[in-house]
Image (cartoon, rainbow, N blue to C red; front, top):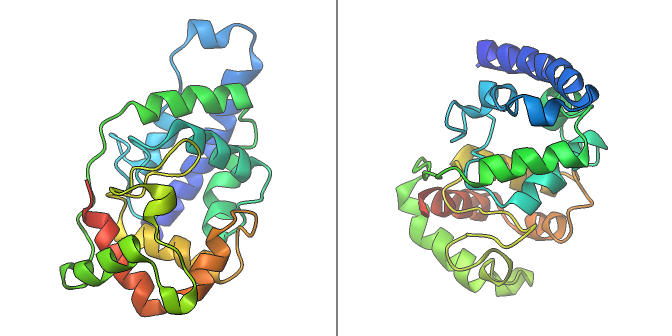
Length: 205
């Protein structure tokens, strides 16, 4: 894990340099291929996710743009984002973010299938019905029946258990407070509910 984190940290620094060079030369966008390798170093060669880096293949393009710019302005402020993504996005313009979003959104997405299968039914019930005792509405309302997302609302279906769990935990700890309503939702969930929800979503296609 240490080797992976060290590699991705170095890759993030290299990506920042590459993005700067690519976006600072007039006409480069028309002359050169989009430097997607700077992303796939950590997110996997087919962008299906790797280690702490989530799957970005098949993600909603509006969401990808919004999150890239949130990394850039540091509003996505959890430690993992600060370590890997702040530097990588320092020179990413809105135009370049849109180029990346269009590319990765068009890639086929594969489910991680790495959650605890014993928790799937509990996670499905929470996703579909919400948690009345905590005043948490059904996740379907925003993310859709299959976790497919809509515009700037992310696709959750098939993301890795570890990533989903860590994101919910980060919101409950006060990180990325601008991502309303997720901080309030995550704060209302118990650790067991977070485990179940992340497990269920990891199997959705």
